[in-house]
Image (cartoon, rainbow, N blue to C red; front, side, top):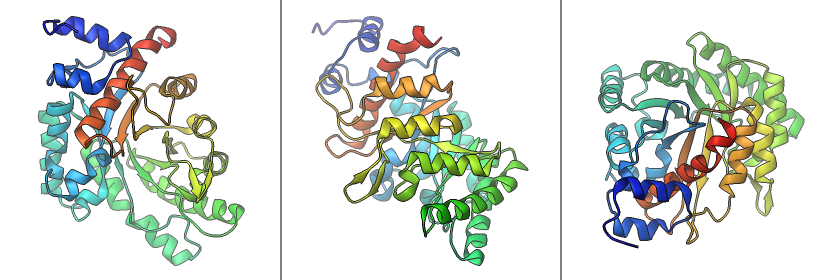
Length: 315
């Protein structure tokens, strides 16, 4: 490959042909982060899920307040998805949230959603504990509203038979959705292990909640129900897409052509687009073969290549 290829030529190549991310980054170490934002009529836009940088955040190498800055500066992305555990004591801290919002605004970054964990089971069999779990999420609804997010992501965790868990999860989700609706915030549920990774079951929960503010966040990779038991990821995403208000592009490893080794992204994005979804698709890199920054860039490059391939078909 010639070393003197111009940026326009590089971008055309990157958008239309399989390539090795590692090779391109060696030759053009800063070009991938300079990819221009897509046109307003792009069939989907790309956001960055904060979990992609969880090791750096936990190690203190990255501060939560700098996440939107790094997203724009280092990865050329203009939208972020927060994880509540990285600012768990700041949900009601207006000064902190104001600083975070300003950093996002100053860098032209959209705050998309907050992923919420550790606030109790919304489908807890104990009614009092379920009520506490619902109310624990209120502060994150308010934080999401302040930051300009459209949603909080929650879990449909419960206990009992599938029918019992459905009834309990529906109760908790409906209560939380009614609160969130008053603030124009969505409550979206991810397939996140256990029975929630059964696409048919989670879709039945959505149908039973039957609230315009309650939806799903289909994740390409979270379909492990139990040890040795996995739900078909393509079927699961297809079942969850009718309720989707967000999409999570999970990635772990890549082949020499830059394709994710566990998920056929073209096939998966066809499912997403066939459902009429045109919102953000969040990069959520969880692999170990590449560093977090390289994994993010590899996922971004793959999504951009898939978008270029499918743009004319779905425009």
